[in-house]
Length: 289
Image (cartoon, one colour):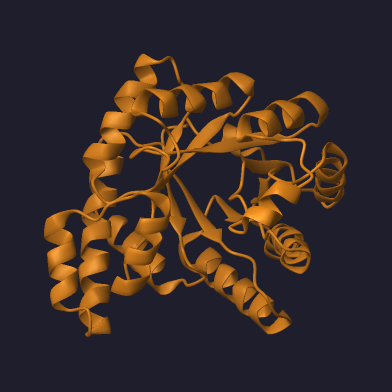
C-alpha cells in the first residue's frame, strides 16, 4: 500500500514510529511491541528510523521488512542521505524494493558531531530535497518528508524553513510528517502558512507522548521544540513520580490529539520510543468519543 494513497478518504490515518534495535533481543521486543499495537489499535502503517551506523542501518532494513512481511502492516523505511553516495542509496533502495517496501521517508540526517568526521564524509547529497528528487526520478517509490512547525533548528527564518518544505513537495514528496510539538497553535499556524505557500499535500502531526521529564527535555532541546510553560511546570512538580508524569503526559496528548482531529488533521503519527502503553492509552481514549 502506498502511504500517500491512505490520506483523503474521510478518516484519520494512524501511524507509529520505531527506532532500530541494537541487539537481536531488542529486535524481537520491537516486533512484539509492533504486534501488540497491531492487535490493539490496527495502525495504518509503521515506520522505522534510520540507523547511521552499518549494523544499526542493517537492522532498520530488517525490521521494516519484518513488520510488513511478518505482521502484515504497511511499513515505511526512513532514509537519511547525508554522507551517502548515489550508488549507496541505490543499493539500499533496491534491497528495500526487493523486500516489498515501497514507502520511504526521505531525510537529510544529522551531520557528525566530530568536525574531522564531518569533513571526511563522502556524500553526494547535501539536503533532503536532493534525496527526494533522486528517489522520485529513479525509483518507483512513495516518498514522504519531514517538516517543522516550530522551525528547523538550522533554518535562518520561518520563511526560509517554509521554502525548504515547499521544495520537498515540489521535488515529489506526497506527504509531510511534522517534528514533535506540544502546542497545537504551532501546528495550525504552520499549516496556514503552508497552504498559503501552495503546499497542498497532507501535513501529518507528529505526536510524542510524555512519559519521562528528563527524556522529553533532552529531545526538545535537540529538535528545537518547546514545552508550553504550564505543562512544563506541572511535569516539573512531579518529575520524581513516574506514574504522575505518565498521567499528565497522557492527559495532554489526548486533549492535543482530539483537538487536532476535530480540526481536520489528516491523521496522527506517534513517536512511540518502541513502547506501546502510552500510544494504546491515547488511541483508546480517542476512540471512546
